[in-house]
Image (cartoon, rainbow, N blue to C red):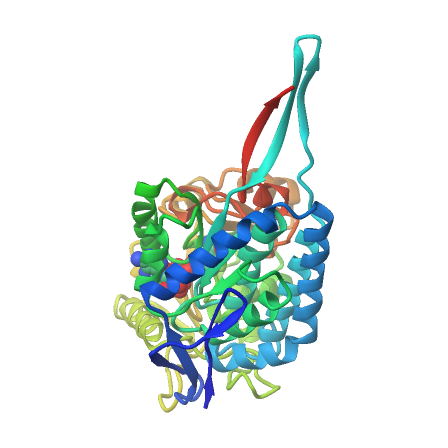
Length: 468
Ligand code: NAD
C-alpha cells in the first residue's frame, strides 16, 4: 500500500489521520492520503509567505529557466505519474487519457515558461512618462478538481510561480495522490516554500479561501463550490480566478456531412468519459440530418473500448466516483422514463468499478434534466431542432457559458452563428480543443477570469502604475 505525505516548506510532512483512495476501475485501495489539519495549512501558508520575498525578487530569466526545468521533470517522471493518475482517476493510460494529460501538462509548462509580461509604456510625452509594471500577488491558493488533476494543477502552478508568486495547492479528495507526487517532484526543484501541497477534505478548501495569509485563490471546479469560495474569500478581499462548470451546447446545421463529423462530435462529448468542463453536453441537430447524425455517431461510438485504464487497449474508463456515477445514472433513467430513445448504452453491467457505458439518447428536448443540467459523464442527449433562431435561443438559455460549437460545411455561416453564442470559447466543426496560447474562461456562471496565454498570466499579478 502506497502512503503519501504532505509537502510543506521543502519537506514531506506526515499527519495523524489518513484516508483511503479508491481505484474507480476495481474498487481497490490505491493508497493512503494524508488529512491535513488547520495547523498544517497554517504551516504551508507561512512557508509560502516566507519564500515569497526571495522568489519574487528572482530575475525573470531565473523563473523562466526554473519553469522549463519543471517541464523537464514532468517529462522524466511522466510514466510514473500517468500510472498513478490512471489508478486513482480511472482514465486510461492511452487515448485522451493519462499519458495525454501528462503530455499536456508538460507542453503547457514550457509554453507558459516562455510568456513574458514586459513593462508597458502608457504615456511618454512632455507631460511625463507612465509605465505599467506587473507585480506578483503573494501566496496563491490553488484548489483543483478530480477530472484532470495534474493538467489543472499545472495550469494553476506554472503561471503563479512564473510571475513570482508562491503556491499552496489542495487537490480534490478523490484524486490527491498523483498531485502529491507531482508537487513533491516539482517542489524539490524549487527553493523551499515556493510550492506546497496540503490534502484532506473539502473543508480544507474553505479554510484556504478564508485564510488571511493567502492572497489569491485560483479554483477549478463546480459552480456551487465557486459560489462558496467567493463568499469565503470576501472578508479578505482575495483575488479570484474561478473556472467553473459548463453545459456546452453544440449546434449541427442541416448542411453537414454526418459521417465526416461523427468522430469530432464523439470526442467533443466523450473526452475523459464526458467528465470534462468544456465537453459537448447538449447536441442540437437540424431535422434534415438528425437521423444521419444519430446513426454515424452510434457507429463510431460502438468501436470505442472501455475498461480498466491500466490495460493498454482501453480508450475510455469508469466514472471517477460513485456519487457522480449515481448522478449520471439517475439523469439517464429520468430521461428514459420521460420518453428518450436509447441509441446505445444506458445498461450498466454492474460488478466492480464505476463503469457506465457510452450512452446516446435521442428524442430528448429542453426541460429534460439531462439537457438542462451538467451531466458530467459518458452520456450525450441529442435534440432535434427546426429553426436556427429558436436553437440559438435554447443554446443560450443556460446559466452556464463555458464553451459551445457550430458544425457546418459553410464556415462563414457557422461563424455568424458562433459569435451569437453566450460562452467564453466557441469552436467550428470541433469542440473543446484548448490551447496554452489562447485565453480560456467562462461567462455567466461558468466563471470569473481566464487562464492561459498572456491574459491568463496577468491574473497572477497586480498592476503598479509608475509615474516617472
Ligand atoms: P467540486 O467543486 O466538488 O470540487 C473541486 C474542489 O473544491 C475540490 O478540491 C474540493 O475539495 C474543493 N472544495 C469543495 N468544497 C469547498 C469549499 N467550500 N471551499 C473551497 N473548496 C472546496 O468539483 P469537482 O466535482 O471536483 O469537479 C467537477 C466540476 O468542475 C464540474 O462542474 C466541472 O465542469 C468543473 N470544472 C471546470 C473546469 C473549468 O476550467 N471551467 C475544468 C474542470 C472542471
